[in-house]
Image (cartoon, rainbow, N blue to C red):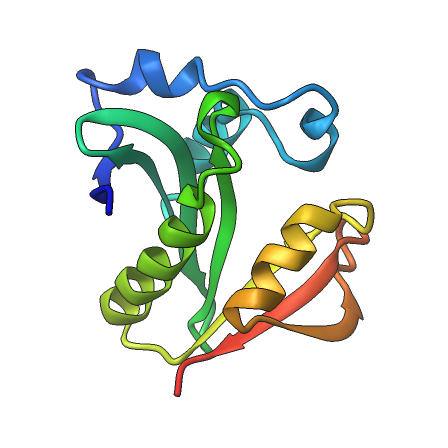
Length: 149
């Protein structure tokens, strides 16, 4: 199977990461890479990373941990349109869960999605995220929780 891995964003990969494209219609589900990187600059808790398959950049993700309870989020993940539908999103999420849980020493992760994003809903629930029957008070997105066993 292909080697999905993550690297920090720096001068060697930033241009390519900023040029990740989503399929038409998906833009309404997630912020742009530019918006995410601006947010990561403003809030040092965010950790943006490039998603690679072998040496090719195939996507972008951003995660972080906040507050006294160390609420930890996989806040953004996107796979470039030409790599979608090949299982990379699921592989990346599974690896990201492992990386983030070890980096922050936690066993609970959160994420949120727009109500209309059925593909993301199916992906996350297939991995084991549970809908919390709550919405994010800031943007109305559905909140999901993953507990590492």
